[in-house]
Length: 563
Image 1 (tube, rainbow, N blue to C red):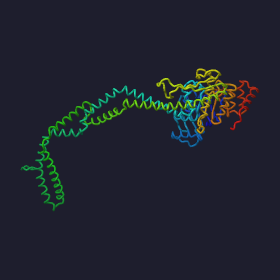
Image 2 (image 1 turned 90 degrees about the horizontal axis):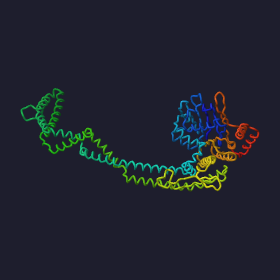
Image 3 (image 1 turned 135 degrees about the vertical axis):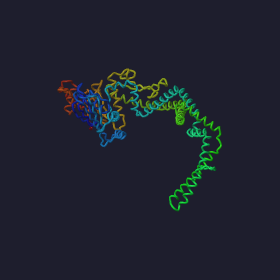
Image 4 (image 1 turned 180 degrees about the vertical axis):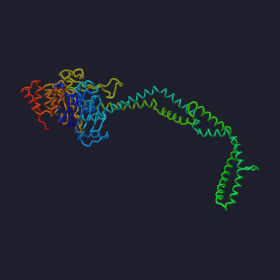
């Protein structure tokens, strides 16, 4: 529920705070007084885009505050939780600031909020029906969406549309796959060829192969070096060697052990060295006396090294890095090979189409079941609005071709209408007058609002120029309709009809004054002031006792309300 709206330097309004009542709030005033300013302000607080022209002339910025009571409004409370925002009190304060430079800011309970978030929350708090709502009736998709909301099958309609989009996405994927299939096959063949070419290198450690090849290529020289090293360490000739010299040093140290501990420690280290030299001698002896390697092994290594050099030049990579590159090739190949084949994708498309058809047919059945009941509700609401012979009917026409099926289903749905006896029903856009369209739009909006879940918190319902194309007794019926709706939901309406305004629970007058700078003021009318305003609306500029009496009679005619 909207509690208050505060405006600072907004358009023609200098500064004003306005409180709103439960039920039916009406806004009246002469043409050009600024009645639509309140709706503009509400739209901004609901996340609509700002216009710097809304800033009052001579001011740097304008501020708008809208305060809502959200007690027991579970939907709004869930929104706060979903967006990780605190809601300590059951009240929501929205602030919107517009600058003359064209920039705008927004706050939610004192914390900055993005325009997208504000619009999301605003849709839960305010539902504005513009004066051009009747034009929407001329669009087939509006009628279908309205029928779904009235039949409370919007969830099924959304699910159907989603499945249709999935089907279309698979179709596009199939078309893209067909155009890319030749390229895909060429890429697969190239990757397979590259992997086959490099396969011998994948089975070995290339760095080990290089080391082994280098050793075997120099094996005879290495064996000679091993023999020479062995001769220096230990030999049977008269030439001195390491082992004999080391033995002499050990003997000298052992003789002096009793004299100095140092010689004992040195002896231990020399014995250890003697053992290590013995082991090294054995290794060199085995290496020097080994058989020459198999020439075939050297040939295999030559072949692998040559392959590595060739592939290195071909791919501009060191041979050792080709292994990592081959892993990337293998991954690409697997991805390409694992893409669904045309047969698999065709099966997926067929399944998606069947799923869509099942939902579309179920949706159509529910629409057809609900349509007659909803038509009767429309007729019952239209007949008191100076349309005693009104008739309505939803007509379902199967689309002539499967290619014409769409997200809304497989049937075209038209709302047919006739206001005159003996005249056939035809689509609204062909026969309805402007007044008839406005009444139809109003009735559809009211039915939509009253059809909502009674246990759910309802947003503020706003009607702009609710009385377009009506007058007299019809206007009174419209007023009674809005007052009745106000018993279960807060609403706000702009009207030019006294009969409508008389039914309001609270009457707000917008007046324009021409001082040094023109400004509009908002006034909540007392009963006496309301009589004068209703008299002005009924009788024109000059207010007489006759017009006042008429205004009093309008108020007297309002049924007793428990509010």
